[in-house]
Length: 538
Image (cartoon, rainbow, N blue to C red):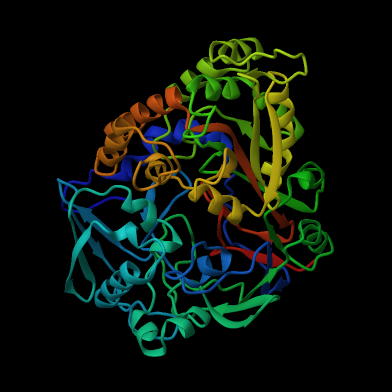
């Protein structure tokens, strides 16, 4: 979401898209209907169904965000339809030539939803609070000092160039909160009743059921691709219902009791595409689904075994079983990542295309052969049996697990699948208590890799000093072309070492009633832009 800078030389991720537009344009659906409802009868309440209830409503205290947070808060900048950074709350910004100073210019007379002035001083306090309370406090670690030049101008001093910071600023995680209210009522109460500057404000939160939001009459935005720069004149209220059961969410949509469904189950995509009363929006996830490997445990400490596993998995078959709702993938950054390099993906596929015979040969080279004819390769009398952790609450991973099990059986590797919740699988991998684990990530900046394969930041048993160096270097490279080169080099090493085994990129869907007009669904996160939306009565 970066746009143009003004006086300093802008050399940050405004170039974001130059690297990736061609690669991602085919993977998302963007609708630009403008709000011109004319005279039809309108519904005034938008109802959205989502799978999970928020753990809290203070964006600075939660570990994950959803539609509730996205409507309550307002980032300084966002990613536009072409993946360029554009203004939201901020009017403009400037970046110093060396990338260590950022100046944000704010609009005059902007307010939080409770009417308090939203000034540079409050944003300064908000960032300082983020650095002390957020589970992602590290995001702003390179912000050494913040200077308030006046009520409408904020100056950030960085210890080094930090292009990864923009990946946070363009999301709701980087949105300012009313830190004065948070200080007054306390963190616990603010987590229940927050105050932001987004298009809607909290009215009611019924635990286990729903959230009610009302239009924020003070709302102002500088988003260039929306018509309404203030409160949406057509939607007074938004009700967000928490419906964890996939089929129930869809049934509520088809019955007309909700207008928008997030988290469309893959099993329902084909049928919904054929329903003329439903609009289906598709975005390509900004991350990948993969197998995390414990490279310290035998026999996985032998790269030939990891390479054999990589080659033995038929990703096209996984895509077929998942009804075309995933894209087979071989490298570590998805097409929606700002540093995606098509050449690296092509290299990865060339190196590790599905090849059972080559996979068997690699196992033989590593000393694994089937000496007793039981179909399982063995070495020194020990059969090659591994445990694969899978997530019962991730439909794509749950379906992929038995397919992978069958694929690896063809080269003599016996896989036992153990299913847990995704959070528990993640916890086990953090404790190094695993052999193979199905994991995922969803982040559009390549800095995510530092939390997965760096020996200190994200040590999941893998350590390579050169990878560490490149990932640390990439955090501070401002020029996007050069930054992409750094992460491409890191990926080439990872392709040799394979601490992660990429599987696929997920297609994500939002189902919308045909009565909803003017909606925009933005890549790469599928953000709902309802500024110009209206709802025609059925």
